[in-house]
Amino acid sequence: MFKVLTSLFFFLLLSCASFAQDAPSFVSISPASSEIMFAIGAQDNLKAVSSQCNFPKEVKDKPIIGDYYFINESMLIDIHPDYFLAPDSADFLVNKYKKIGITPLCFRYENINSVYENILALGKLTNKEKKAENLVAQIKSDIICAKRSNKNKNKKIFYVVSVEPLRTIGKKSFITDVINESGNISITNDVNNAYPIISPEYIMSKKPDIVVFDYTCFGEDKLMKLLPNAKKVKLTKAQSDIINRPAARIAESVLFFARLGNY
Amino acid sequence: MKRLKTYNFVLNKKFFAFTLLVVIFFASLALCLFYRLDASNYEIILKFIRFPVVIRAIVSGATLALAGMFLQAISKNNLADPYLTGLSSGAGLGIVVSMLFFNSSHYSLFGFTGAILTAFLVIFLSGFSKFSITKLILIGLSVNLFVGSIISFFILTNPQKAYPMTLVLSGGFSSPDSSEKFLLLLFLAGIIICGVFTPILNLLRLDERIVFTSVAIRNKYNIIFVLISAFLTSISVYSIGILGFVGIICPLLSKLLFGCDARLLFFGNIISGSALLLLSTFISQNGIFPLQIPLGVVVAIVGVPFFVFFLLKEGRL
Image (tube, rainbow over all chains, first blue to last red; front, side):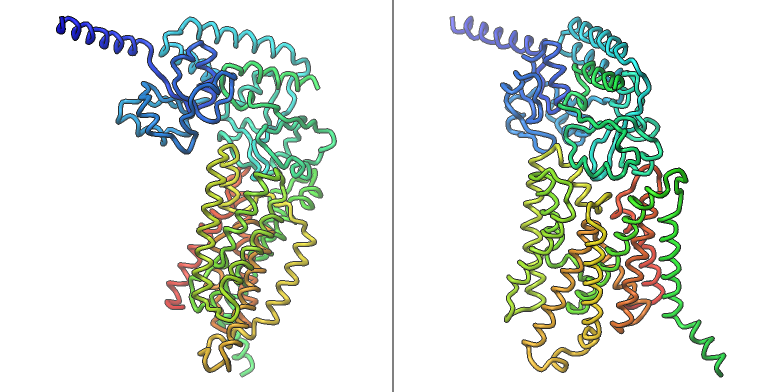
């Protein structure tokens, strides 16, 4: 009887283990990746998130494992996820966890296509391929609708990441691609960098129609001294964290820039 | 005979060095103002961008070099730095607080206030009657470490603003909001005070026990010089942010070129500091246009080869 019970116990344990292999667990310190996990319905696989993850609301019910700088390593070992989702700038932080069998996934976000690829990759890993494909199709059709709503195309947009120092988006930033998709032009789309510190004179020579401030940006009044046609320029602030997040809501971000074109 | 004298004067090392620095100064000034000037709106560019930048470079270069000269003279140590009295961390805390809690763009004013307050605190803690340079340096170091860790705490707990904060703390402001008139007024005041006290620095080259009749008088002068250098450094923080290195290298370079007479060094430091910063400003803005290189990075790249060249040539300080 004892032998039967122990073998039954081990059988159960093994089946649990194999079940766990079917649905790998994730930990995420990238707000964009957390958002994608929720959007493809894989939120149950997500065991812990970062303190910056704030969308959707339910993400706040998840335990917090740290942020870009600190990771609670004892908690990480307790959870022992299969994958660690991090922004590509944090790869130096998470690569060391390979040694204990946690695979770091540092997604690159250089344009909208890479966002699609990331959604599909996460869908594949979580066995939610169909949902991921549907989500990508939905985003694509939303972006086409958003682009159509832009009646006066080719407005020149200057996107300000921070005023001190004056940083903007360059060729390698996905926001440049978002602005292109919306039918407008980012005046710094030829600068070969992701988030360069830029010369104010260069911005003056490009004469932007619309200045968009990132929602984390401050000191907007200071910039106005530098722009010659400041009275004609429309100033607007990206209201939330939709714009600078390469995730499932990227179509809303395209819509935001498309609406600016109608100004 | 007369001709020979003139000939000697031209060949004079000090005169040659001074001319070289003046040439670098004016060449960089002209480049900063007129290089790649857009003809369509040159008035606005000159008025709002280039003139303020040039004024700030000159002011901060001159003040940092002078502050370094005073501190190196009183501590009798060539490694003394204008930020010795905990100023950099005080200024840094001011800047971080303005960015975090006031969401303001008045970093310059906050930095200036932070620097002045920290300097006063350090001098106060060093004691007036029992003042000594070693005590000042140790207390400055402690305050630097203490305030520095507060800054790190603020940066680490606010990841969204961490990157801009780190950039501002590491290499100076790219577009400070300091008013040029107020800055020039402060600068003028600083230069006049320096001019008055500089001849006394020559006395410090001698043994203090011979020069000063009592310890109290020696301490009085030391405290005055520390205060002057703190004031000068705070002006530089107000104009361009925290910028290391200039305050060490320019006084040493001037010493190599002009000798030890403080009256000559006064002018030498003003011209070498401002020339170095003007040249660095030009390179930082036009090196990889339209991208900008942080000023702190360029200052080191431009300054070190110069310094090492003269150090190897002269051999001793």
